[in-house]
Length: 219
Image 1 (cartoon, rainbow, N blue to C red):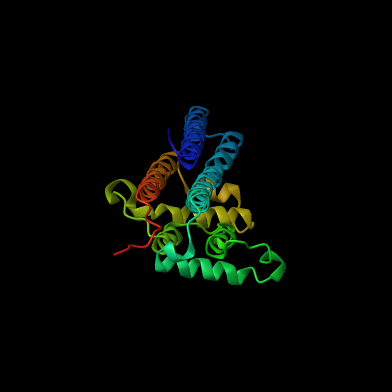
Image 2: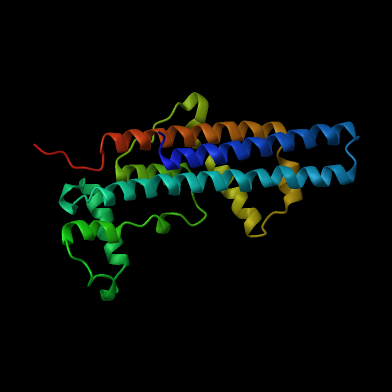
């Protein structure tokens, strides 16, 4: 039985693949129609939309993996002093972000509840997920960020996806501008590499959970 964050990734990947097939079909149809203005306008919107659906997959997958780590620690009632030093620092920072005393008066088993109430994935993600952020989170939590560079380019496409998605979201670029800049073929290549990168990272997280990599080594 696969973990929920892996299942979710697989569903989203299937959706992206279907979308990319639609883009490729529209590209062929536009070429067959002699690249008429109406066909090109539709094609450019579809091409640009690829960045939105890819970014959605990336952030949702990263958030799902982090939530799974938190849920595993909470359900396992992991104590603060059982965590690795880098995770203890993360828990303390999370606690400081929640400085309302009313949030803490219900704590019963302080070493365990302290961990549970301090962990929060939301502050990590705000429309800015790329490979650099994933490497940073991997360093804090202790899972590997290594992937097959020949297949993933170490996630370098995630920066392009993030930047274009944000440009579209903030109105800095139009769908037509983005659609003109990226061919259906280049989008397919970006999609394959970026999804392979995410798949590798999620596999690393899965192994990390199996190995209880969040626990400190005891002599």
